[in-house]
Length: 246
Ligand code: PML
Ligand code: MG
Image (cartoon, rainbow, N blue to C red; front, side, top):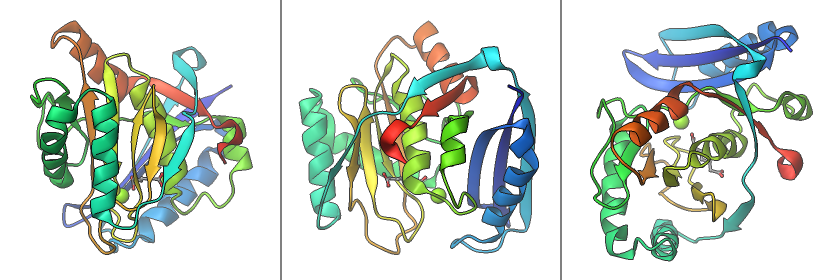
């Protein structure tokens, strides 16, 4: 199948407003470009003065197909309860003595465009560019799932995050991902790992807060394994089979 990657990025006076990406079949290319454009123009963070659409051909043999992580939901009443749930999962992963530090370092990711890559054992930051962070890109749900999904012009936080988390935690050196949205009107976040699956935490911040960001917890050597991990996150193409998740 002939496929293309589309990346959209919108900003106003250099301030990030919205970003999204797709990997779509040739026949869908124009219609997805229009949808992403509409999405850029219609965002709660404001009107963009610059929109970038980048389109690249993707060949079939570059694509890795993955199954979406299993999903569970933990209902929490407020951000404090949400953070306590995250702490408990970090404890289960053997990281209890570092859980508080991980939670406070996570806050530093709020100002970054990409994610923070953190050594899970030493808490050393591993992003080559700390301002930008590491961006997980070149992933989407599988084409048949895209056809099943409706109303793609708006953002579906859950679907997009499940696709991203599935890609991220499938690298053998990623222990887990933590995420809370930077969208002011979206307070659900998650912790994901190969072992836990994708655990949604319904309240991780106060409504109205623009603070959000991602941390990828890494375990491995800082030479080949780190280089391979960053290459995987930023360049390798992944399509995720959503099965019953939509
Ligand atoms: C984002 O806005 O990019 C992150 C969305 C997190 C979605 C959490 C969920 O609903 O499962
Ligand atoms: Mg956002």
